[in-house]
Every structure is written in C-alpha cells, then in structure tokens.
Image (cartoon, rainbow, N blue to C red; front, side, top):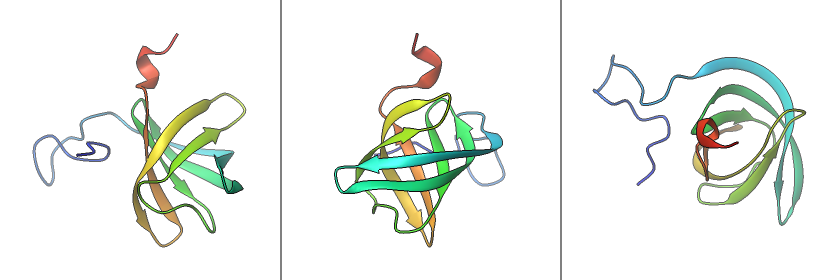
Length: 94
C-alpha cells in the first residue's frame, strides 16, 4: 500500500515526510506522451501535481523539471490533481 501523503499519527497530526509548497513548471512523461504540469508540493517521497489529462492512479510516469527527473507512480487522483509516489526516495539519491 502506498504511504505517500499518509499521516503517521492520524488526522491533525504530522505527515510521514515533510512537504515543501512549491510552484515548479514541469512535465509528466508516460508512454502515451508528455503533459505540462505544475508541481504544487514536493517531498523526498513524492509530489502533488496539477495539470490536464494526467494519467490515472497506478500509471507510471517520469516527472521532469529543470532540476529534477524522477520515476514515479500515480498514487491518487482528484479532478486535475495527482499525487505521485517516487520510485526512490530523493533524499537518498546521489
């Protein structure tokens, strides 16, 4: 089961990973093509994206920005928003 975005101690508590609110332009690349996205928050284990026609939960993608290229999987979807869980923890990558 995915742990991205899940709180470690229930509602009102802390999340498992500290997120940073950001505004970063990027792209979500899948086998079906590439879509422009806006990264709204980011942590070592995942990101929250907003964009049109993004892939459904379970889909694999490559998130690319000027400073980041990370493989991940869509953990959740709501309207034009997607939660992405990275394949590897960014904090442990060289």
